[in-house]
Image 1 (cartoon, rainbow, N blue to C red):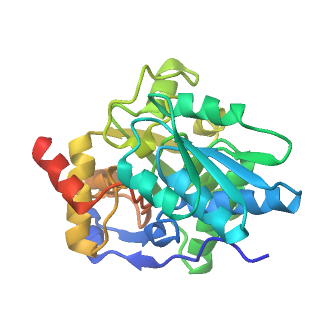
Image 2 (image 1 turned 45 degrees about the vertical axis):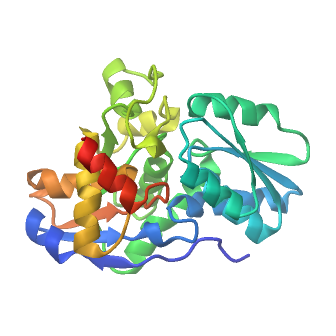
Length: 306
């Protein structure tokens, strides 16, 4: 069974390496067929469900996960319904529908869309959770497999956190390759920082709402597994502003000719704005998680507003 994701380029960034003082490697998962790392875990999960006889896929997502399910469903010739909250950008809905999926808009935030999607489940369908599923983590771990196969063993990984699916997959991959001392810098934006809230509270807690423009990070509560890993692996929590995330998207576009959304810009901002945080690291892996819900015009508009 062929994977539904691709082995994405691993590029050394001269500009960020010079800025940080170590070798900065970019895992360009913005080049996945659906535009984000979600292709990995979601592709694996969809294939597993099809193998057990499922005919229809259901998802809830503010953008990237729903688009990945829509893409994978099209490739597997399975019907797909994606439930999105009203905060979802029209561009994301358009892209999901282009893949042939049905889109239902309901709820003010992801949690409400999630509840509606769950209510649609029947014996012929499977629900593809956007972040809280061991099948996803297994698929996302392939990212670290590819980095190690390329001959790079990072001593730090910088990634963005929404619900924690990428975090869980990356830590799974690091453990698989005995990289147990590799620090993971988990980055969120103010107004969508569910991991930071869980750490402060001592357990996962629900945010009152999502106020960040980085709506792809808009899980009001981080997964239990992501919080659990915080106590088991060297993970540090970092919260950056929307402005830092957007500015980093624009700088990344100039430096690397690649357009990503603020959810991805959050991670990039560590290297751009807080390089001293990585000064003691030799091989730094930044996961360019991608995202297709932002356009250049929208980034420019946000930059002016912020």
